[in-house]
Image: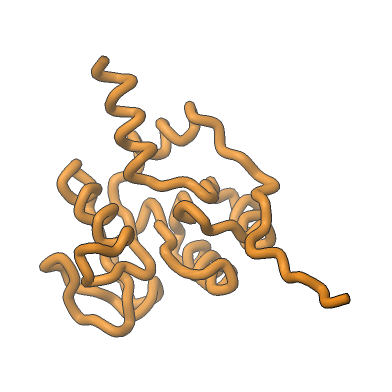
Amino acid sequence: MEKIEQACEMPEFYTVPKEIEEILQTNKTIAVVGLSPKEERDSNRVARYLNEHGYKVIPVNPMHDNILGLRSYADLNEITEKIDIVDIFRKPEAVPEIVEDAIKKGAKVVWMQEGIVNNEAAKTALDADLKVVMNKCMMKEHKMMMAKNHG
């Protein structure tokens, strides 16, 4: 009988809604790793939304010099300014390296978008005192927070 690979792992760490709200209210500079220049892609939609809602978005995509009219960086190490949140739109197997770079850059939060879970990388980030959100959409979480806070 053939062994079936699990499509994705289940998160072993959960971030409570109050902590997610605090993350969104206190962290304003977001490096979006895997940001696509294609408007129909989730990464592009989320980054545009965040940009329109007062966050400073820093695109990270080695294939493009400019996305959303903003300078795009090949990786986190190229960014010279302070990063609060590293928002990841990459496959789970790419996450450990991104987390290592986020730790080196002094980021406060690693956020893995919906469908992205890497428990080992999450543990690495938590051990380095970073906050971790997995398998959640930053745009959806922000919209829920706004609806809750503004009736």
